[in-house]
Length: 158
Image (cartoon, rainbow, N blue to C red; front, top):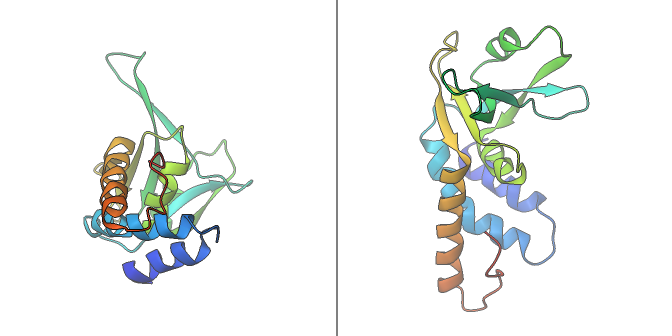
């Protein structure tokens, strides 16, 4: 699926409550903008047997009291499986990039996504933070609210 098809799928699968599809449509350009900064249309995520995405907690080396929770997105199935831990039963699933970005907001305990762009290279990744995504969504929703004559999106949604 190309990026436009991915966003349309999100809109089509949103709860048909009269508001959610409008919200997804309003943030669609942000999802596309973020996804265009990445190299792949789909990424592989580690998933537990109960179908939850695997969160990894990173601790600061010099300040162990500082930590952040990330989800790693891999460019290949092989890279994802090579990263998994032997203790936890996990498998890798392919997920469209816009869906990963969209789900970030629904996961309050997630601080960042790290996308590994190059197969075989797990040392360098592209990080997208929750703050970046929230700020861009907030701007898109505000712009939509201002330009929408019906005012169908609640003001406190972002």
